[in-house]
Length: 282
Length: 210
Image 1 (cartoon, each protein chain N blue to C red):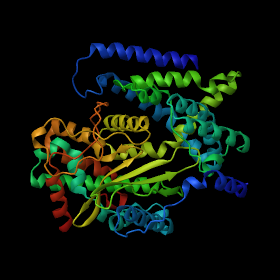
Image 2 (cartoon, each protein chain N blue to C red; image 1 turned 90 degrees about the vertical axis):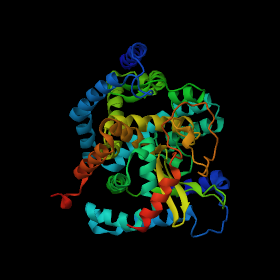
Image 3 (cartoon, chains in turn purple, green; image 1 turned 30 degrees about the horizontal axis):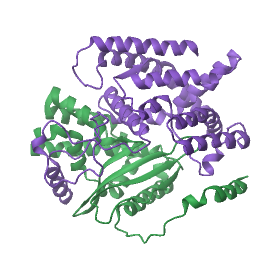
């Protein structure tokens, strides 16, 4: 566990250094693209050779209910720090509900293998240290692809290091048990992503770009608990701003400099008109 | 066990879930999303051919039931962003055609992976006069945070049309924007059309391949 932690920190340090050396070409959110693409290719090769086949076998061999127990068991452990992160973000009732989930699922689960709390309507949340930093105003920083762990940013990388440091599974004394828990959890997570990764392959023209943009959008949404402030209109051609286009329902707050969400485009009316005529002549 | 749990649930959580009794307009965007979604899920769960993996049949269902409610021209324009103005009328028509095919095939793939998860249709939070709304649906699954599926919809002369779908906070249209702009910058609008065509060819259901 400590070794993985060190590896993550080393990668972050290297990334930061490389970041200072790179000039601002290409996508401003991804100044380290050449390095990231190399790590991405490496991860992809490992995934194709090991992770995906193992996860596929796991999904084909282990019956769905048992996979559910595994997912719930580790989900229950994760709820401890999901609750802690909610509290750190000042979301007291969410945090306490997360811990209530842990109590319910650990006692009645038993040991968390069933998610009774969700059945009772106490929903699971998605929180981690990266989101807590973001909630307190830390921007994502340059996009990073971490070895094995995949998509991240400088902020989320530091968050991941903390997530690992505080991971209760890391405190299991028996090395053998701890390692098998870590591996089982990883295999389960990868198995749950099999459909998503197939979809990614099908939908994307360039998987690297598609995955990066999806990750950045997803994290931004998570930091704002599913309702991020809307983006401003495209900046480049302010003169072309449409006169009668519907205004975004909330005003851009200027706090988050990401510019990858679509909003009403400059040629909005032309687009709608094209849509109308297209609909009439299929 | 379940009975005890539901009893506890009623005690603990029911007040928060008290439904606002609303008279629902059948033309409202949230009602439309619910009706179409439930109809499609029902069709798929009953259709033997689809269950045995017939992609073409699934695509037929999507074309008949889902597509009429999407504005693909708006989606393509939004995905193209700045590059949209660089395309001629003919190029736009072909871009819309190819992007539509790509989205339908991807959507079919996503639907095929859908099993009996529970759906939670959220009440619409919009004024009756709004012409641009977001309809929220959530897919509930034990052991994981619910996945939000948000449909951005626009009121047009032909009824409410979807112009973007956001899954877990990821806008489909926005996600294509960088890719599209990169290709257009390197290979022009025609390059993008070719790129989409060859992508679609690799996704074509077996029966269609020549």
